[in-house]
Image 1 (cartoon, rainbow, N blue to C red):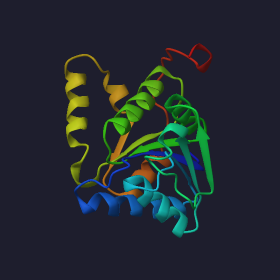
Image 2: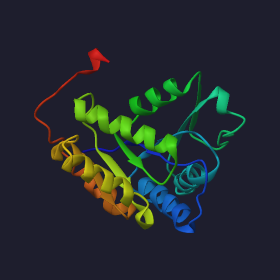
Image 3: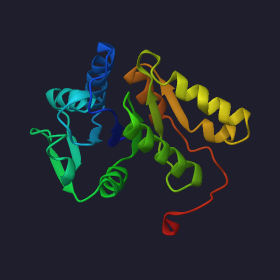
Amino acid sequence: MSLSAICVYCGSSPGTNPGFLNGARAMGQAMAARQSTLVYGGSRYGMMGAIADAILDAGGQAIGILPRGLATKEAGHPGLTELHMVGSMHERKAMMIEKSRGFIAMPGGMGTLEELCEVITWSQLGIHRRPIGLLNLDGYYDPFLTFLDHAVACGFLKSEHRDLVLVDASPDGLLTKMEAFEWPLTQIWMDRSEI
């Protein structure tokens, strides 16, 4: 599968573990090496800023999408290939999805988790068939993966839906899995005309 543009969800904070920022930089470098454009939330700070800086420094491209209301708090990155200012968080998320051929979540907070769960749900429903990856830096997403397994065990999530989430601790490993991804579901619940 061609990953010409990848939406990356991550924190506008750096987190407490230096390995998180280092992982974000490594992901930016790995994406640039594969000529995958970064699509992200547009901030110059934290994990967002680290991946954007890394992909740009490596000669890649980065597209930021920032709601006008967050422009002062998440100050838009000044060196992006493109920076789109939109009216709302809903517009931001829709444009990020529209411009991307795959999705990656790196460490982040509630916004990252909300965006990740949305694209998983949309894949589960058949609204998109693109790969979804977790860059599990230093085990950050271990509790989330445990929750997914618990949801399967409790009958709230099918195992084939759990398998929509690709996981790796290394950027290159995750990108390789995403490139090889084939959407495995046979039952489609919805199509884009219904959303």
